[in-house]
Amino acid sequence: MKTKPHINVDYFEDLTGDISESGQDGIDEIGPRLKSLRKEKGLSLEGLSSKTGFEAELLAGIESGEISPQLGTVIKLSKSLDAAFGQVISGAGDKPYAITRLKDQKAISRSTSGKGGKHIYSYKSLAPEVKGRTMEPLIVQLQESSEKEISTHDGEEFIYVLNGTVALLLGEDQFELEPGDSAYYLSNTPHWITSKSGNATILAVIYGK
Image (cartoon, rainbow, N blue to C red; front, side, top):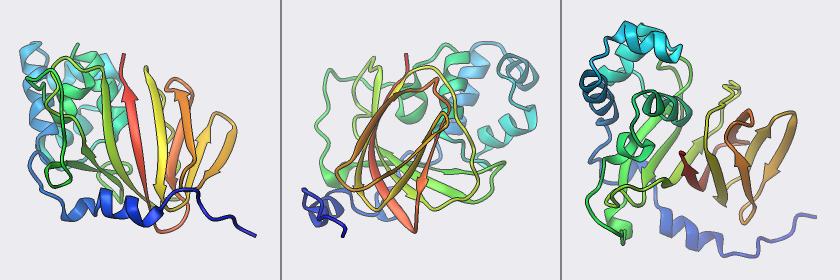
């Protein structure tokens, strides 16, 4: 018999809302930010491709907005460009703190599988105004996906399930997480996360050292 979560799931559904209905400011800015950083470093697409291992075609698609990169891809690109992950995701910020109201949560992007295929999750930033931040708190809405695109990169991650059931792969270990469950792992552990069925929503805090 399934036990009832110790938290009020309906409360969290009201708190997080539907990302697709949130304000869309910033949703197409990741590509231009990466392009600007690349040009500041004097790198061509081929040069960045050589430095990161990502194909120039993929990089061009990300910069143009035709491809929505996964978070692991953004982390690797920002590190290769000597930029903070948060700067690429939601801007550099100019304040020492952030108080983010529900109505002000900033929708950032939808990430896709492969080279611009099926949408696998959407996310929005909770603290884009903080300058020099090394952590990035996000509300992530996961969609069910059977395509296992394993991610490995520097940093650390913490996730907390708000609603739905999440399937999490860490190395060779597989877990199912329910509302109220959480996981903390080093990002250099091969990992993959998806909704087990339908949609699921998590709070994710990513430390991109």
